Image 1: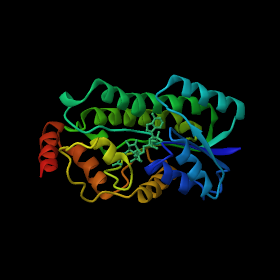
Image 2: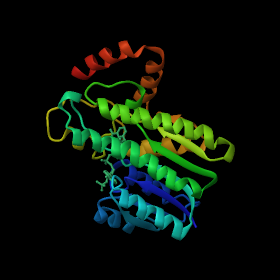
Image 3: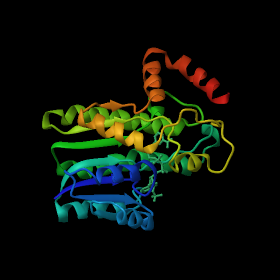
Image 4: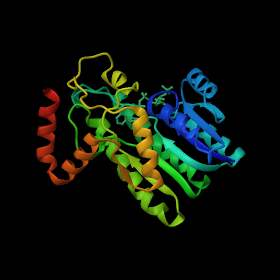
Length: 255
Ligand SMILES: NC(=O)c1ccc[n+]([C@@H]2O[C@H](COP(=O)([O-])OP(=O)(O)OC[C@H]3O[C@@H](n4cnc5c(N)ncnc54)[C@H](OP(=O)(O)O)[C@@H]3O)[C@@H](O)[C@H]2O)c1
């Protein structure tokens, strides 16, 4: 059976990926992974393609064992893998608790790599992998320092995977969006506190990010910046030394 596996499927971008992939004729079933089971069942009720809710906390080793067993039992062909589960916490690094920092590293880096590794044996020529990184991957980012570092890690990992899987005809794309306003990410990252990020001008919408990302993965782009701001940011971060980019972005976010 041809399946798509989407992590972070209970809200935001992951949910929008499930909705979009449910109209893809090459996908027979979508495996939707996140912790909130009720949300996954709700999602399964209004999609045209069958959605299998897989409630897992991807930061728990036992959850990864569950996923490994499920894959071994069902031996699906994985047409599309989307690793969208991710968290951020805003604030200067000195104010960040060890737990918050570890949570970001565990989910954004360790879990994304673990899920991808478990899925590799089930990818075939033409399969597509999308790792959801962020425009924060392009430079060190005061106010989101650990988060930006996790996304830089994921982007680097994804680019290597893209290169290694090229001969096998498997497409791998790092998705690097700017702020997305219609997801739970921003309020969760603010944790109800006042943060230095006050405005999110020209923020994207999940559906347009999903459409552009799936288009880019068909063309096997190794990095996609689904929007004007992240595209300009990517170019700027390549041309301008980080020593200059960091104080400039710091200034912009304080305005
Ligand atoms: N929104 C933005 O501005 C923005 C910008 C650039 C990049 N991104 C990236 O886009 C991705 C999706 O974020 P989003 O904007 O869609 O935010 P979101 O609405 O908060 O979605 C995050 C998803 O991750 C899941 N998740 C969180 N902890 C988990 C865990 N321990 N185990 C399994 N699943 C877990 C959540 O589901 P449960 O709580 O049910 O587990 C949720 O489905 C993230 O990787 C984020 O870093 C977001």
